[in-house]
Amino acid sequence: MSIKETVDRIKLLPESFVDVSYRQGRDEVLKQLNKRTGEDESAWVDVFIEDSQNIIQKLIQKVTPFIIPDAYIYFLEFYGGLAIESNNHYFSLFGIGPMVEEWYTGIESDDAFPEPEKYGILSLGSLNFRKGKYKFQHVDFFLDLAGVVQKHCVIGVGPWGKDDPNSFRIIKDIHAYPHRWQRIANSFTEWLELAAETRGIFVYDR
Image (cartoon, rainbow, N blue to C red; front, side, top):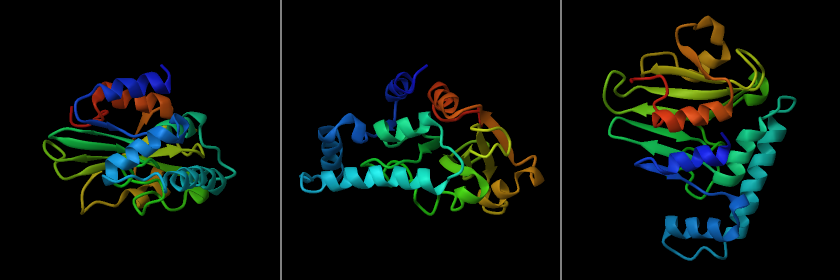
C-alpha cells in the first residue's frame, strides 16, 4: 500500500488530524495556516514553505552518514504530520506542517531524540494513554537508521511512566533494557499502515 493510500485511510478515521505540506502546493499550505491562525497568512506562507524545506534538508544532513528512508521524507513533504485521537489515547506522528505543535510534535522539538547523528536513531512519534491499562503512560517511537535492532525498522519504547527510565536513556543503550521496547514494524511504511489499522494503538492496550 502506498503512503497516499494509507494516509487516505487515516483521514477516514474519527478524530484523525492529517496536515498538509509544501508538495501539496502553496494554496493548500496557506489554507491550513489560515485555519490555524484565523488570519490571512499570505505574506508569510512562502517563508513557512522555505523553512519546512530547510528543516528536512537540515535533518538529512544532520544524520549523515545514516540515511532516512524515502518513505518518511515523502510523508513529511506531502503531509507534514498527523495525529489520531480517542477517549483512551492520543497518537502523533512528528512533523513540520502548518499544524505542528498544535496537532503533533515538531521534528526539531525538545521531545525529539537530540542525537540522531550519534546513535543512528530518529524520533518518529508518540502514543499517550488517557485511560485503560497504561493510563497516564506513553510510548515513544523511533526509526532505526543505524541497524541497532534492524535497519529502518520502527522501535516502540514503553509504555513508561514518570518513575521509569525515560525513552532517550533506553534508546541509547537499547540492549540493556530488553523488556522496555519492541520492534513494532519493519519499515516506516509498515508502521504507518499499522497506525491506520489500529487507530494509532499498535500492539498496546488492545
